[in-house]
Amino acid sequence: MPQLVLIHGPGAGGCAASYRYQMQRFPDALAPDLPGHLEGESFEDVAGYTHWLRDWLHQRGHTGGLVLAGFTLGACVALDYALTWPDEVDGLLLMTVAMRPKERAPGSLDFRLNAAKGGEPMQKWLDAMEHMLLFVDDPDLCDELMECHKKVGPISQHNDLLTIDRFDARDRIHKLKVPLTLVRGVDDPMQPDEYELEIHEAVPGSRYIKLERAGHFPHCERPDDVNAALAELLTTERTENTEEI
Image 1: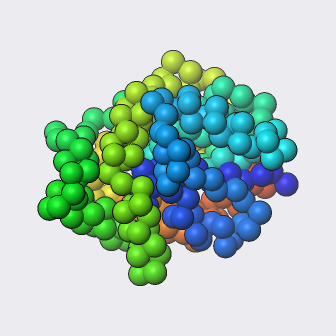
Image 2: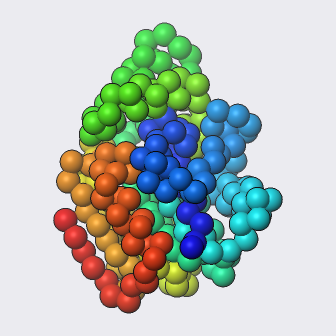
């Protein structure tokens, strides 16, 4: 059985707590907190996180047979891992991901920097983080993720956005050979471009799932659907492109 590894991003608490439903469904999965998220220092590029994750896994004896799942920054790390060490990866599930720098609303970075000053700017950032969880039906999980945001803080998120926007795999994406499932929440309140479709079209045999009543964090908004996709990825391979809504 492959080893499932769940990699978080800067949203939904900014730590591994958002994978509650996946850890319940797959209790042997691993979900580390990345450096700079609760503890340690952030990396300036995706490759730094990828190397850290590989070392973390190898220290625990997981040197192959990996199924990597992630959203936003975590998805970039998973994709980079599979492109850098393809022999160690058996499958990918990527959510809310781009293979090139994203186009962000003006002021997105300053919004996080100002929040770090505290007071009203901090409250506005927390309100925005809470709004991003509007499709998460479990109030207890929402409360836990908001507490995580308070601990991780807006500077970590600011740094993560810069790191995500430095990531560009367009010149390598054609080399991806492992089974790939892409998941997009079609009701994302941020209304990002359909970056996932670009990857789907660039990777023959990939699967593309579009979920309604899901936004930036499908794994905690539509957990049953994401868990089903993970279970399939853990046990089967695909040879044809598919698209679902």
